[in-house]
Image (cartoon, rainbow, N blue to C red; front, side, top):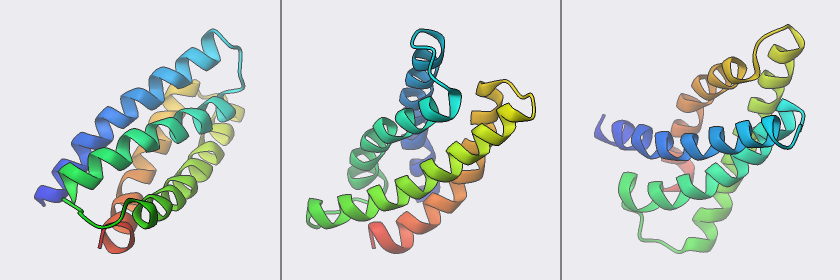
Length: 120
């Protein structure tokens, strides 16, 4: 349970990075929300990797292999998140509300994958 709490804390920091970039790209750059969501997710994943490596899982193994596994998991989460955001916006949702839905949907999925595979 403590790992899940730490994972959630690190995720909150990474998510703040993600959402800041999402809003900046949509509001200033006029990007489509689904694309901005993917970009924010990629940058947020870098923040999440290093926080989870040290703080959540206290992983001391090689960076290269765990980074590749984490990025694979993050890519899966980003693609599913982009799909959720794109679909919800198409259905008339505000892009930030759609991103909240995508974030919640991916939280438990990526935790389970990272715990079992990335930082085992």
